[in-house]
Image (cartoon, rainbow, N blue to C red; front, side):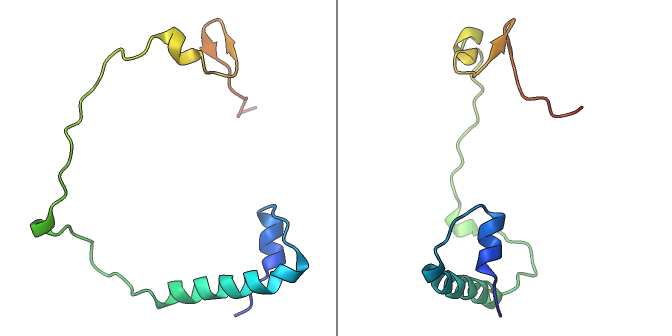
Length: 89
């Protein structure tokens, strides 16, 4: 199997020096081979009843912070509202 590390680096905007390309290619091939050796799981995973994980009780905490405390960390606020980038034109 041949993996094009230069292409992967370009897609992920990484700069990899030419002398390290062979090492990264070998490492990536080893990772893919390891994943190929993993067994297929046909059935749904179940928990072991003899080793149950204790779960915490969910408790709602109303009014833990004031509105001013919450918007204090916002990068931009106008008229008491958070300003976010426009996503739909």
